[in-house]
Length: 423
Image (tube, rainbow, N blue to C red; front, side):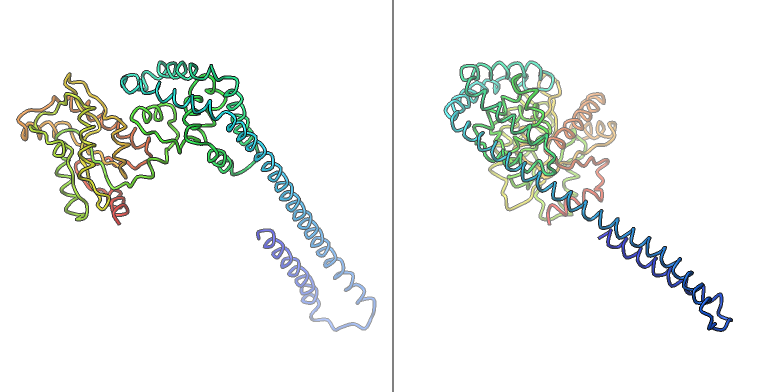
């Protein structure tokens, strides 16, 4: 389209120059009579021929260039088409070979899958291990666990993973524009058992360098079912760039609103509730039936949140939209701040999250007036910082918007987001 436009502009310019040159000659000698001497007509012809001939020569050169460029473009597309056809032919041959190997190793893969499921259940009882601070220890544990089940089957399973790695490297090193399409085709030919075994293989030393970078880059495990709290933690620790589709399948009919004690969550929720009549308000503390709302420390935070999730299942309906207030962190019985586990937010699956903040002195004064006791300003500040940090982590992990609201002011961005979500 662009080259056609340039061609027409060039032709118009040539015509204008031709007409202009003739017009200039005529205007110059307009006051002279037409001579019957052939010599003068010859001079006129030389003038026209010299000017027009030059212009036509330029036009010919331009047309020749456009023809050449068009032929080069056709040749380029033809080469690309040929390369694409050769790529697809080789890709599907490799895929077919990989499927045959997968079929041949099906028994060994099932055996490894069952053993990995059993062995990984040990992590359920080691919450402290499943953290970023202990990532190196955890990685070594996973490596040892995988190697124990891999080694007896290494001769056949080794061939399986080498072929899988070869197919992935072939896609990655190709000149294809839509590489994701072929990674997804490969992914579609692998069952859940294979994906789980690959999950642990790529974390281990056997696959960390060769296959892990591609797994995380192309989000190859995004269809894996992280069906337990332990698996979700492993996912978030080792595959931070992967957004899992299992989270997208659930209806997002909850907005989570967090903030420190005394920041004004109830007041803010009432404001939103009065503005948006079809938004139902739920309070975590009311759902948990706290006997004394002035008690701000929790003896067993994990158990407390499990109870919350169980009770929410009984009151939340997919027919309504809910605003749930709660916390991103809490003080435990030893007065140590603990983040609310990311597993809780995975189960809540919020459409977006809101974090309320305000001046520490105002919060301290509000707590003293309401509860007749309060955390110190330093404790409140520490909790505010921790709430913000965990809220950002959750927002990034689940790729959902985070609105940080100060002084209970409903911003235009938040209003627009709520209206889009509700309507």
